[in-house]
Image 1 (spheres, rainbow, N blue to C red):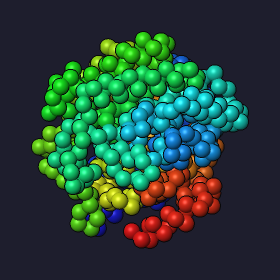
Image 2: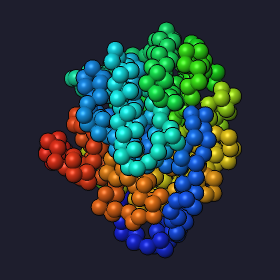
Image 3: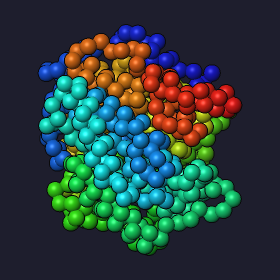
Image 4: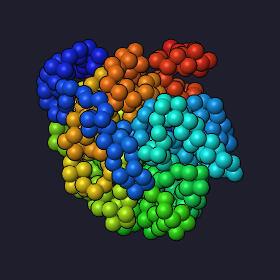
Length: 478
């Protein structure tokens, strides 16, 4: 069948992996031998505006589903942060997607700005540092930031878990998905001024809590990302490039004023394409003509060629002018085209089977990131989409850093099942095969069914959690 691709775990040797990459017409940097520290490219320290990072592994930000309904962390949140620290990665990008307004929460258990946030963030940061020290590591070269977000069209802030979308502009495909019966409310320019003020407030709070940078999130279809394609929006925050980047520029200016010395980063979807839906045989198919899709920022037309990165280059030029050097690159959105963003063999319960070998999706992100790093050598760039590589993640990651294709290798899902992978790689230890993320997508299916965040198949803590049985029942029902 068209969606049946070889599993990475079945590619037992480097030669088999490289032969498969060649057979599908992809190109991936690859080192047959993975070097331990101190000689490994992955072990090299690097200076950033937020501090000196002691190696080239980065933990990507998570959207937790295990906070309280009033936006505070729980013991499950604290455990996750401690494991981020235990990972050995020296750049913690965001740790958590932290909503700066209640109406911007993507789920009713997401962390959110509130009266106790400063003390809560102090505690989470200390949990992370304690995990790092517990792994026998120094903390002087550990760089920790907080991702600030508003979920916009994908807001589900209330305990009833119903969509409460707030959009930047009308969208003919996405509007009917999130609000089939009524128009999606549009945020006014005054709303966006208020949002910018909240972002600045949260940034100053994060600085007081000990974080050395904040990420002003511009990825995955959330509000910051959506504004970048708001060409049809009228008013100060839409239309031309100046309007579409006003939220970023206004927020950076406010942070420089109210939190001097705090570094700023941006996680960006470097390219996008039409929304996909489940088609024949449950394989994803485009819901609009990719070549005509007018709502992408960095449009990929679905061909073998790389996406059109002119939008992206203009944005990275702006970041350089603003003195922002921390950039974490991703692609698309987990809500409407997850295969280009988060390659996986097994889709979440509400997803579709991959319409291309997921290795193609990985290779595309790595190639785009390398092209942008070449054009913007002074930026400190984190690459994403590595978890699908599984056993071969260290081989590809080392080659990418060695050849200058990115400064950091970002780990997302992998950290839920195998947080200590970076330490094992740097210490020259064999990978723990039974802990390697196999992209079962239960860490997405669970939250989509109102359950907590975690790796239910591979983390014994979550295998024993009551939500594991609920997840099995939900999947059986689906």
